[in-house]
Image 1 (cartoon, rainbow, N blue to C red):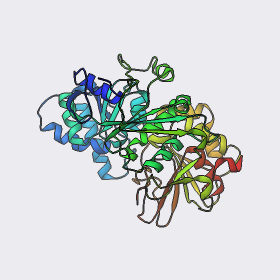
Image 2: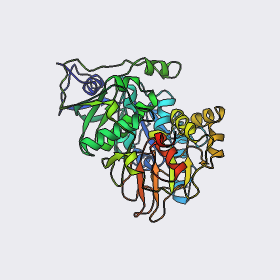
Image 3: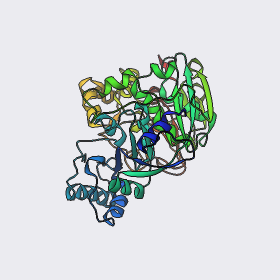
Image 4: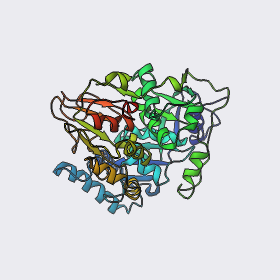
Length: 418
């Protein structure tokens, strides 16, 4: 029986020779991750089991309210700290050592091809960029996996997306996934695995592939998987924890839908409020002014993203009526940006630079929008009130568009200011 990547991973982890869409399987989890928001309810459930956690398989990463913004978030962080101390958890990444959870998971070598990883955060699907099956779960499910190392899955149908050709300058992986979501809608891949192929995907750096997999959930997908290649294997050298075995779809595997795109026809794309499917070319939105430009998050906070933005910002200033916030995704990204002089470029442009945190992305703190304000953001969601007041607006875009818009004070295709 032929299978897709998702089906092969679930079959292997369930100890079966084959599976097909709709099957229910109990599969072995390689890792389970919780953050500071989802950790507290997971710990409360876990304590009722009266057992020891699978220490090596459990990763604890505070990132949403880092540093703590109030008493409630301090209590969440404290609960994680005490759980880690009680069970002597080896994979706890406290404030000052970590960053945005999904980037930490990748940087620290937990993610690798062929692995099955769950996280109590919807953007766990990011790990598909390295050929893993990553998917978000609830805190109760995470607690169960911490105890048992297994979880039940319904095998999803798979879709195939092929993007051929070359992207234009300043068009990135973010634009590919926004373009796709704009076509299929936010429920176009509901409980399906999106697999991405084609010369345009193969040419992308790993950072851009992560952006694509990260936003698979915005189309309703269970996972977003890209076949691993030498770029992935090279990245994992001296980084990956343990052994791994990449899995690939059979050439005649069955897909519920097949889509094909010409990369040259994909432009720098913006998702208008208040859904990621509400897309338009950045060049068509130049009349829309912005109060804030945000660069960061698990979608676009990697060093490659910061380099793109810094190239555009170098020698320029942020518009007087616009503020820009730059948040490297992890401590490692921050350190590299410092060593490359990127942080100075941001500061010279009058941008505000923060340590790693998810705060602004979810409207938690540090970058919250006031009534009537607009933000051009490199994040993944622009739901009503996502980053602040319910009457504020969030426009999603790639790092180049965010930087260009910060300079002009309005949504701007970067080619306009070359």
